[in-house]
Image (cartoon, rainbow, N blue to C red):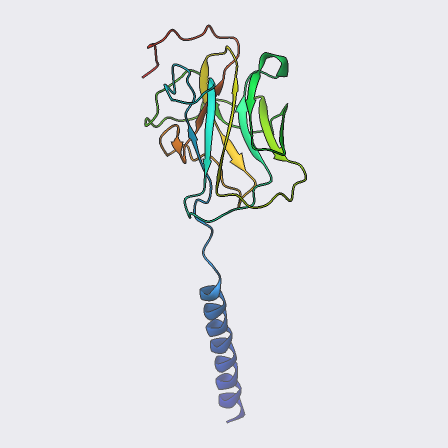
Length: 196
C-alpha cells in the first residue's frame, strides 16, 4: 500500500511540474517582430531613389510608436572617411567608419529594389551612426545619408533595437531586406546599367 501511495505521490509531483512548465512557457512573450525598417532611397543608379544624396536611408518604425535607437550600422567596402561627404543625420548624431564584426554579409554587384538575393561574402567595414549622448529621446522616424562616388552593392544593416537587422530573404531596399552601400575596387555603374 505504501508503494502505491508513493507512486501516486511521485506521479502527482511530476504532473504538477509539467503543468507548471507549460504555464510558464505559455506565459513567456513571443520574440519581438520587426521594429525597425530601413528603406533605401539614394539617387545612385541601383536605388534610383529621390533622396538628396547618393546613399540615403529612411529609418522607420512599423509599429507607429516612438522607439529609442542608440545605433544604426550599415556595411561598406570603403574605409576612407575622406571619400564621403554631404552627411545627413539627426541633430545630435555622429558617424564613424569602423571594422565590421565577422560575418557582416554583403553581395558584390548591384540589383534593383524589390528583388531578393543571397549574400556572397562579408563587408570589411561598417558605417556606424550613434546619438550623443546615447539617451536621446525616442523617435518615430529619421533619415541618414551621404555622398560618395562609388558603385553600389547590397549589404546588411543592423540596429540597436531588439537586434533588428537586414533579412536576406526579404526584397532589397524596401525596409526589411539588405540595402545599397558603397562598393570598393569596381568601376561605377553607368546610368541604367544593373545586374538583374
